[in-house]
Image (tube, rainbow, N blue to C red; front, side, top):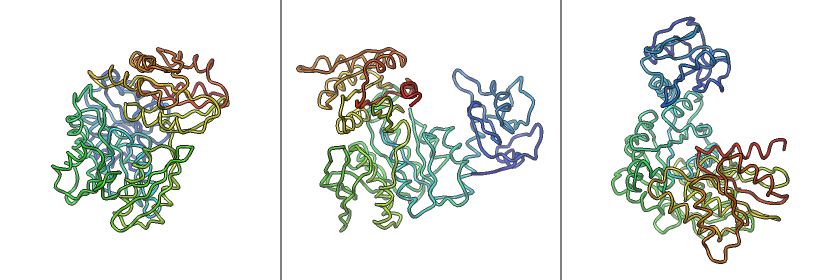
Length: 458
């Protein structure tokens, strides 16, 4: 964690101090409700909210200072650093923190699996190196520099998640944190509302390769045709991971036990090593292959790598398992798209279950003109995942229910809801002891609130 004086910060961001200057800043915050004592509050200006309105709240909650735009008016009393633009100033702080620590940067992007892959990479590399990772999903133009401020002087490697919704956003992030190694997990059907086609999506993801440092390494999914397509225009070193022949790190002889935990043999060069995954789901095969690829590239032994895989743990909102009211809840509420929803439905299918399998599925947003057809398709496929009860949350998710109901021989009970509170009421009445419940939907639905309210008091 960086600890800079107000004077030092003002110098970095070319700002003017109003108020006390002999203050040490211990952290950054962009949400006044989450401010901790010693933080510098950064008021961001969005489409609907101007963070400058909450500077006074931030001071009351413990912020020792705040940035403020030169054009802002009615500013409260307290130590302020006046800048041209708070977001640009925040990015300057992140850039400076990264430059001072100077770790090797591994940037991770992809349509699905960014966070879980980042966590797997960090779990493996931490067996040999002082490894920093972005917490949660600090993967945006404001989240990334906030994460970088948390770097410690001892960090040797920084594993950074990079997200996007449109063209130019990954380019902005690699300008903040130029990677030594870039990882693309996959390129699926997401953000089509803004980008239109998967080719445009691939080009947007490919900006991470354009931002690689000279001599940098690209680590790409060799089973993904769009990753292969991007590699054709990248002249630097590339390593492919996947199941298809020709991958530098290939997973073969996959087996899955009755609880959905996969084992496989990874082949690379003359080595063939058996890998047993500590968490369920076939997608973890790919996540672990990325970590293995990086571990071997960075000189780690197989023993260190396997220990790192064994140490891997999921995080809240992403395949996070908890028990509530006698039922098992699989919380994968962070986001949703057609590929990730199939992944989690497979996990639900294999999870040990003495009761019924219940899928609570919300809208998959940002799919553009294909949104109806993609929701219907998920519904038509749902029978193969042994789902007993389907609860559809939202206007688009209703098409999942429609697709499920259209299939011949379908015996799934389908419920429809238009809000999280509606879903909660259905769950309270339907979920019984020993059931296994998957809860998943797009970020804008905030379906983690369903998990919180259903599990309240447990």
